[in-house]
Length: 250
Ligand code: PGA
Image 1: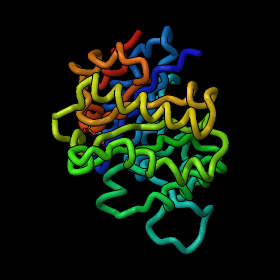
Image 2: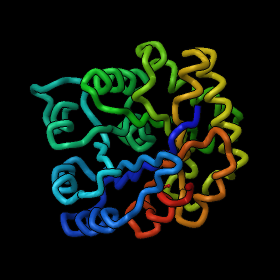
Image 3: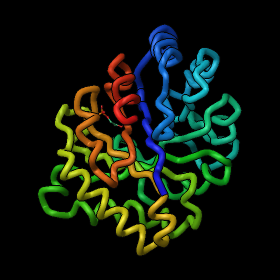
Image 4: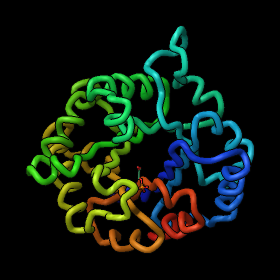
C-alpha cells in the first residue's frame, strides 16, 4: 500500500499576524500535488492557529498545534487542550518534539500520555523521536528512538492517526541534514521495530517523516528512500522554499 507523502511545517515560536498571514497567502496559491496524495500540515504557534485558519483557503492544507496538554480543561495555567485546538480548526498536534523533550524536559511517558489523549480527542499526532549527537556517536540511535516510542506502543493499539517524525537533534536547525542513506537506515530500523511491536500492516502504513534541516534544495535527495514518507520542516517552512518541499515529490 502506497503511503501518502506528508509535509509538515513547524513554525516553532516564530511569526506575527502579518508574517503568518503572508505565509498562508503564499500557500493558498500552491497546487498541492495529488499524484502522491500529498498532505500538508502547517503548525503556527497556538496563539495564531485561529488566525491562520481564518486566512487559509487551500483545502489541501491543514493545521497543527505544537503541543497539547493531556486534559480537556481545568486549572492548567498556560496550557492548551486538544478540544480547544479542534475548536479553532486544527486537526493535528506535534508531540515529543526534541525542543520539548530537551528544553522543557518532557519525559517519554508524559509524551505518550499526551499522545493518547490527543488521539482520543480526535486529533492526528505527529510524534517526534530522535537522538542527540552524543547518542549517535555512542551508537545508540535506534535504542533512543525505540525507547521514545515504547510508551506510546504500550498505550496505543491504533496507529492510523499517528505520523512519526524522525528528527535527529544534531540536524535540527543546524543546516546539517542527515544523508539520505543515514536517514533511510534509521527509518527502516524504526519500521522494522514497529513491525515487531504493532504488526506488519500497521507498520507498513504508518508514515515516517524525516526532519532536520530539510530545505527546498535537499528535499528531492530523499525521494528514493523507500521508508521516508515526507518531512517535518522547521526553518524552511517560514520561507517561500517551503513550496519547493511540498512539490518535491509528484
Ligand atoms: P529545521 O527544524 O528544519 O529548522 O531543522 C526541524 C524541526 O525541528 O522540526
